[in-house]
Image 1 (cartoon, helix red, strand yellow):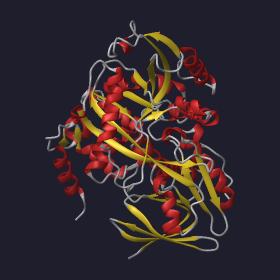
Image 2: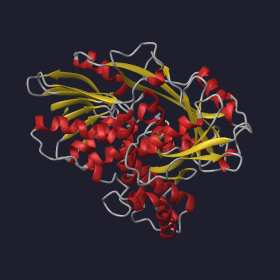
Image 3: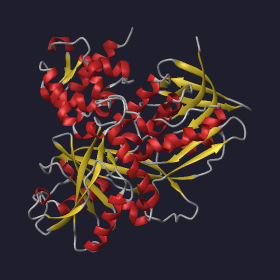
Length: 513
């Protein structure tokens, strides 16, 4: 029998913007259906540099409003999700060919003071010959600067927003594509196609296009409307190598052409290097790094580190396409890194209302969602005010339901408390659980008091209990969902490992016949 759904809002797109809007809207009492043609965060939102940051380099383009907005959000998000977001100190080695030191100091001073900062220490100069961050660098780098930003598990950030939306009544449909919509005078009739459930009909009072790189195509091909904004698709690629340093700092390197690359400690044993910024004109479903990008990232890394890397050292890579909004005044030849990361909301109320999200960056997703729901709420006769700035994301309520500084600054203490509580599990496993699930570890480990209660060890460090949790509560349904988005366990398994096959067989057996 064909499934029929009725809702206030149908959201197309399960990236960070779609999931964030679903969370905000459902929390205000609106009925929401979100459909995503693949897995949550399976494209752009899991292909970021994994930073919650103001965007220091955007100051160069006088994007003061965007930087200030992002810096405000940086503080809010760190408090609301202390398990998947944590502070990170960045080292910027000073190259004689770069801007003068006084200019960098001025930029960092502005970065420190554009918005209220309570959690993170400010910037200062360092002598790299005396600092631990100077050890891996070439001897020619003697001076540098240190400043603060945040790191985020980007794919889990999307999932946590979807969980929050579902807990407030939203229907989350993954691997479900919106294949047709009909715009009526007061509502929308949509046809969805689910890989699992077949055709689903949805009647919605309002449609939100949060399709990211596909937003313009969805408007043109499915809605049959005008795109309104010109999207410039920018490909960003990253490489991962065995760790190049043993300290907790990250690096920000500037290429002679002005572009920025980060080198970040990643998954205990690795270094994440990226990103590239190049125009992309291919299929947004088939984005992969190319040899030139790998060479570029290796070349820039080798400009700074004493230990040289080659393409053969790359153990993993990923690429994504960011949909950036081009103003009419923008030059088509303008460098990709210079195009704004700010977002635009296009609200069309000529018939049944349609909201399209153009652009955005992961740091400002919550504010984007808040502004989006503020914009559409009167159309749906909804009077509930904004709420997400004062609420924890699922698992972040370590010291109460309200975001607070203590959870961010004392998260290591929380991990130790859990390790003492669950002494029958390996401390490293408990730490991974804590940093992935936060307080939802209680749900994961409910009624389990011994290693035997965890079920089969499907792959090294991956027990049946966790797989069952991920399939039941987090919409995971295949190897890649679990090994590369809900976790990064795939990075730790040797290429020759049969762990992926073992998990595939286990998931196949889990499915109802």
